[in-house]
Length: 273
Image (cartoon, rainbow, N blue to C red; front, side, top):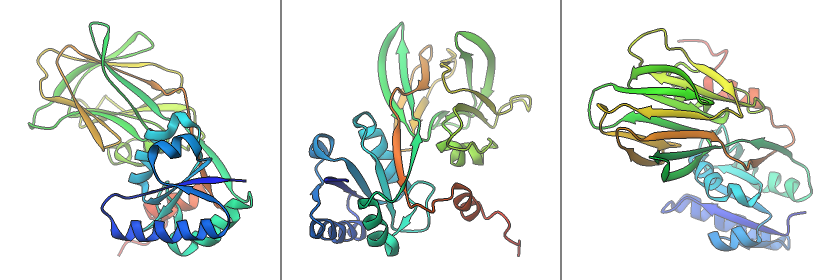
């Protein structure tokens, strides 16, 4: 039983705000406490309902991953990979969730640190991916990749995507990476437009530590966390990525089918016109 539910809506979005207000009224009529302040959610909530889309869930996951609060996503638009409950189903599905009728799924995140001479200068977590690329010039960057302290290769490319299974259907997929089922304990490395075709997507065990060292002649490099936040990386700095110590738990309707969502989003089986 969920006694206190945190509701998160999209900032500056009147549709999201209005839907969240309707949901709040519904929950309070059920005798459920509702909070919408981040500090109160972290302290009191035993469930978070996100009214928005996949982007809102990405931000919520990064914010509350260490609080061990399950997340349910209400999608305001088309079916999402993460937010898979439509507004039309909202009251019905939430009622069932309150009665314990749901599917619970664990998703891993990545912990990312930028280090210089052994000192951490930036750190964050990502549910989808950590992307290393250059934003301000049409020029390749050069970097070395190490996995568990073993040299893998030197690359000249537009960048590198380090992805979770969740993120494998995002930027990594459009760059030629494989789809990873969320239950797979792995991390994917997908090069962005590599200089040589021999650099192919690589999957490594989930417990691996990945270190990317930016070469001295590569300037203007940034890392991007879930496509929502960024940080500039100087030549000579190292980017260290590993699985985060905590997981998030997504709640889905009882009839949730991952492959049905994949078919719908990627249009598998659709006829070409």
